[in-house]
Amino acid sequence: MDARITTTLNAWRKGRPRLLLITTLLFMWSSGCHGNDQPANHLLLFDTLPDGMSTHKTTPFDVRTNFSKEEEERGEKYGEEEEEEEEEEEEEEEEEEEEEEEEEEEEEEEEEEEEEEEEEEIWMAQERNNWTRDHRNRHQKAYKSCQKEMSRDPHPTISSTWTIKLQKLVAFSFYTTGKAYEIYV
Image 1 (cartoon, rainbow, N blue to C red):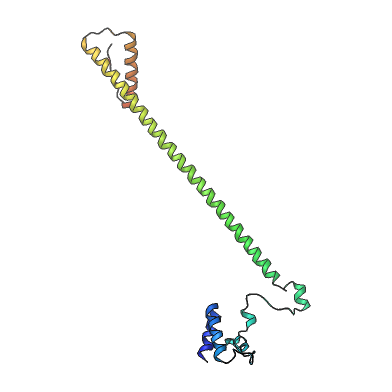
Image 2: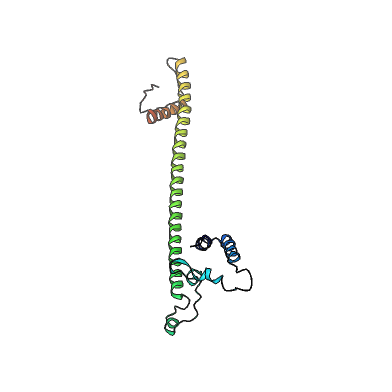
C-alpha cells in the first residue's frame, strides 16, 4: 500500500485531525485531484478503510434514516433503550456515591465525637490532678505552720480553730497519702 494512504489511515484511526488534513491534501495534490477535472478521486480515501471499516461505523453518531416499523415500534430508533439503561446506571451510580458520602460523613462525625470525648477526659484528668496538687500544697503549708506553732511550746494550748484545722489536715493526709497521723492535742 502506498505510504501516503497508510499515513492518512493511521491519522484517521488515531484521531489526529491536523495530520489527517495535511496528508489528505498532499494525497489529493499528488494524485492529480487538485483541479476540477477529477472531483471524485478523493472519495476513494474515505470509502476504502481497512478491515471492512466504513465511514458509517466510525462516525460518532448514528446516521441511519431508514428504520423499519418494527424498530420504530420497539423504540430503538435512536437508541432510546440504551439511553434509558445508561440513565438508570448513572442514577444508580449517583445513589451509590450519595450513600458512600453519607457513610463517610457519619464516620467523620463519629470520629469527631470520639476526639471530643477524649479531649474532655484528658481535660478532666488534668483538672483533677491540678486540684489535688493545689489542695495538697495548701494543706501541707497549713500543716507545717501548725507544726511550727506546736513546736514552740511543748504543751501548747490550741484554740478550737486550730483543732478543726488539724482534724481536716489529718483527714486530708489520710485521703491523699493513705497514712494516718496521730496528733495529740
